[in-house]
Length: 173
Image: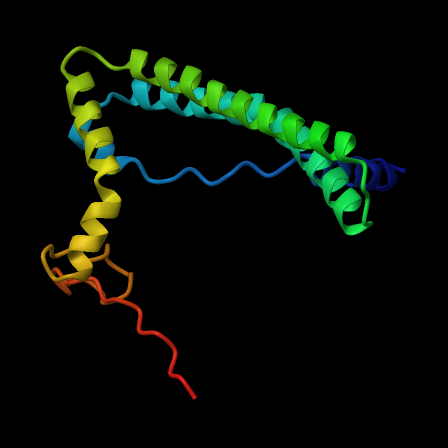
């Protein structure tokens, strides 16, 4: 009798666990923690804000996916209902704007976690991120040496800086 109860409890636990969506892996934050001198409490707050943003956008993304599927169905079915196609396109655009608005709102919440000495450093990171395309183009021309990947990555530990290689076009036949 006790074995049956234990077996039922185990099966129920497995059923619940199977329905719980997996949590995304937490990316490493050690470098930014050191650069901004973040406390463990700030890291926790920032991670909670990111989770809240994901949760807020989940319903919007599902709606956007449904509308995109409806639009694809109309287009692949050869529909000539321009009003329905236009409505769906506008709905998708408005949903994208909601996600952008949420992103800005949660970004501002994250910045509010920082103190006065951390905010300029965070701004420097944002400014540097805007230069990423330019940096990659400069590296492709050999003007910038990119840092070596972290240990365990391509090139292994101590591989040193390396210029970015340009992809070669496929050979013509």
